[in-house]
Length: 263
Image 1 (cartoon, rainbow, N blue to C red):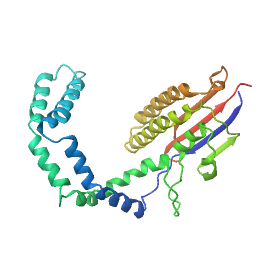
Image 2: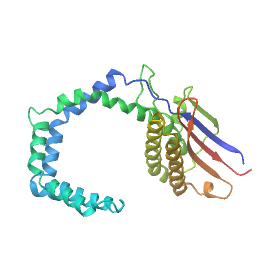
Image 3: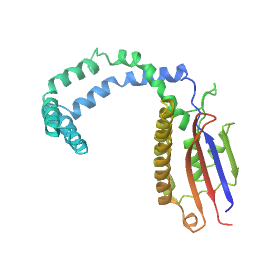
Image 4: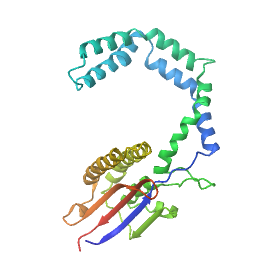
């Protein structure tokens, strides 16, 4: 079966975040302190709301989770301790919220002190890209988004190709309209999570888990694609794939998107 078009791109991580990106994140987040404080107080105005929306809601999910643990655990003891202790924490929780987000709170200083952790965003940027950067530290559209947009027949990414991108064939959309616009965010979300977690696993020497993450993501991506393929590409002999694989040369995930037609 001949390939009508194919895109191949490898996720490459920027070595660091430019200072401008990091400073913009800090300034934007600190400027939101008052709004965050107001939103929290609106959602959780009193101890009753805390019990209902945080304590009890958390305990309900926690108890569901514990249903799956082995018999050697005393589930009743664990769940009772968690539910009772959490239900008593409104005053401590409220004091912490006031100290952090209230007037003169420490939220801004904590943003500054924890800013280096935001540099983990480079794992996501490597997959999706970022706005145009004069330093060339990252692409406007990186492989995960690049491939997803091509499924819709979007030609804009092709104008931003670099040495990390390869496109062959004649592009045309494979998703029905307007469903393509609705499912590509799901494709991007699934692929980004897999790219980030696969890289984490590889860095930890967990290569089997790394490959399982990518395999499971590919199954989910196939399911998403099959929902939204246009009438032509649902016919026998047509095959559209969005595949994540590990590239041992770059030490990261490779994205391959292919549209194949019957001969």
